[in-house]
Amino acid sequence: MSLFSFHPRWCAGLALLACGAAHAQAPVPQQETVHFGTYENDSFFDSDRFYTNGVQLSIKRSRDRRGEFAKALTRRACAWLGCEDSVFLTSQTNYGQLMYTPRDITIAQPQPEDRPWAGLLYVEHAYALLSPDQRTLTTLSAQVGVTGPASLSEDAQKLFHKIMDRPEPRGWHNQIGGSLALMASAERRTALDSLSLALPGDVQLNTAGYWRLAAGNTMTYAAAGLAVVVGKDLPAVSPPPPGIGNKLVQDAIGTTTCMLKWLQCTAFAVVETRLMGRNIFLDGRMWRDDPSVQRRKVVTDLMVGTRIDFPDTRSASHGPWFLQFKVTRRSREFRSSIPVPRHRIAAITVGTEF
Image: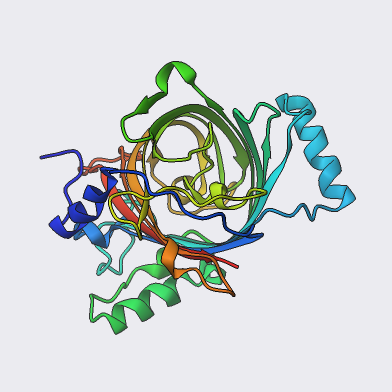
């Protein structure tokens, strides 16, 4: 079986990544805010298990609206991370819900050898800071949320399954209990010249290496990864998801087209390995008798995707609409006496600028 097995209609979308002749777009006014929503689900691969669903609404801004307290916190963090000379690039607020289930959601009894039922409802805020040479991007984020019944994951899944006429989830009374979930993280992403090159047709292939540290009662881990982005008019280091940062710069200029005059495209591939110290969705709450499984200490994600912009959809009230599609293949996250397969998730992101 191939690394990623997905429907043929998705392949047609990925085929747009073969960029053709350049057609320069006219300069466009600066956009200060981007709104986008992301829907992740494993049902794209005909499964309903493990990390089974995620939804997130995001608002990204280019204007620096930090108060004195937030500026002091970022200065202190940068003194430790080595980004004191970096300048504000964007801020981003995320509102989302995550949902985790065992493989068979129709079993009402506890399933101690399978992944626990769990949910998270959260809000997250992040600041992106760019170095003076525009080759290193530092992202600082903080997340606060709730687990257990207050996450509304049970209500959301049951409603969705009822509407879509799918099997009723019957084991949510076994979920990891309610708690205040906190997590802070820092990431450094640096352009790698030795792995970047110019391709025919004014196409760029940019490679960046990154590391991330996260700590909290939600998750604690250390991660390292390599990200490759292919497209036109790319910055040296692209913030994830690739392309959105391009729209939030002073004197913004529209990127060149892909194969068609009314289409712009960017492709990306990422490999990331995490050394896990804690995961509330596998370990349960600290000092509580929650369902849990034996967490694997090393987890690897392999991601590929494409972002497509539609420049002709720009109007006087908003910027162009865009669509991003991403596929993730995740290694086994826990050990059990029953077989634990690798997991695949697809994510669709849709948004526009205001």
